[in-house]
Structures are given as C-alpha cells and as structure tokens.
Length: 150
Image 1 (cartoon, rainbow, N blue to C red):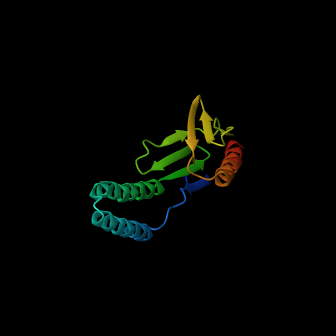
Image 2 (cartoon, one colour):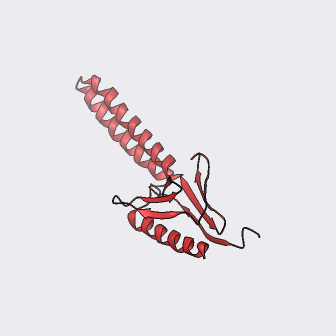
Image 3 (tube, rainbow, N blue to C red):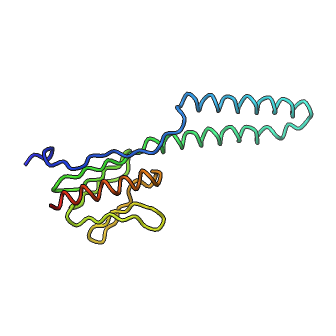
C-alpha cells in the first residue's frame, strides 16, 4: 500500500521567530552607536578603561541575536501513517525517531511538556511551542493515533 494513501497526520512545528535579521542588525547598530557615543564621552573625561566593557556589551548582544536566529531555524516534522509515527528534527537533531502508532501514548505532564511514550522509550515533542499550540498538537496526535489504531 502506498504510504501517501494512509497519511493521517503530517505537521511541521517551528518556534516563533525573533525579528527578521535586518531588523536585528538595525537594533545592534543602534546599540553600537549609543555605546560609541558613551565611549567617546568617557574617553574625553579620562575614563578610557570603560571601553572593553562597552565593546563586550555589543559583542554579547550580537551573540545573543545569532543564537536566537539559530534556535528559530529548528523544526520538528511529525508524520503519522497507519504503519508508523515518524518524528524528524531539523537541523541536526540526530536520527529520526520512528514508533509503532499502535503502542504510542501521548502525555502532557504537570509542567505541560508533550511526551510520546512507546515501549519504555520517551520522546519530547514541541518543547519550544507555547502551551496552547502544544496542547493543540497533543489533541491532533491523539485523534490521529486513534484513527490509526482503528
């Protein structure tokens, strides 16, 4: 049987993105300009040792922006057929996880984490999603798994 015929769920979940890269560059440029003006003021007053701290401030902000853009590029693709439940994490999330849908249990714990259980193995899903989207994903998975079992 063709795997496309029995596709019950195919969803890609992604974190909410930060600002667009060009807007982050504008913010970084503004912070750098303000720090440069402050540095000039401190140098004129003879307090030149403040320069490394102002430079570190801009460098750390640039690192934080870069890290948030990299984190926003993540995605998890959940594909459910009657034969398998596949979770593919990109980029570089390791090997794809493939579970038998008949044995998968969907659980939301007390910290509202979505976890799939099968044969003593657990897979956390959508940890970057807000609670409402995670709950919606859990309900869609439960419904699709119920259809896969019948």
